Length: 209
Image (cartoon, rainbow, N blue to C red; front, side, top):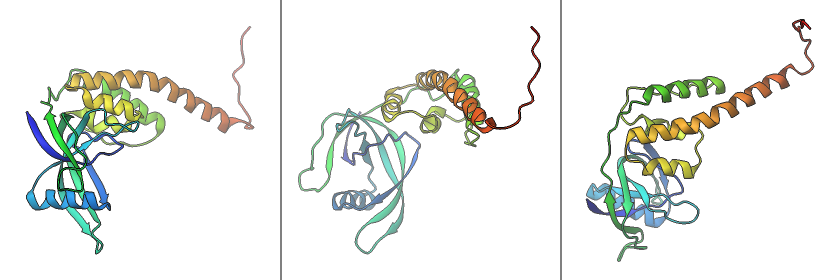
């Protein structure tokens, strides 16, 4: 299915269901957001990576106009609706300040996966090593979207996740990433422990030769 969207390219990846707070200060995006609010329209955030638009992005819905400033700036809350692929890009749209284009909406695949247990075990291990608390519910649909920003992916890797249709594919991608990351984090933690112990009196076990 194709659709025409006002477009707001950003150097980030937004996932369906993700909440994104934005401070709107450029006149072109003030116009875009005002029209989306007044006409109850969605807009698109195509990923802008390495100074180009590789093609995929996320359709967004403005959920709240949090604050409007006297000079026209705004703080808004928005939420990801679904993934799209750019068909064409016009900058600016005729008669407008902002860019726009036709997009092909990507039909979402299955939102659940048989790999959830393997993924959550690795997530628990990572957060335990880092001694941080990150809340996630393993029973959530599209769990991968909820944790992808929290496992140390590069923006290119986050974009790779955006292009994957099914939850199973996305979870396998994250599992493979964590399989590489966890040994590195474990080694870092061991190194930190050695540094902390340097200069301390050590109670060493006797060795039998």
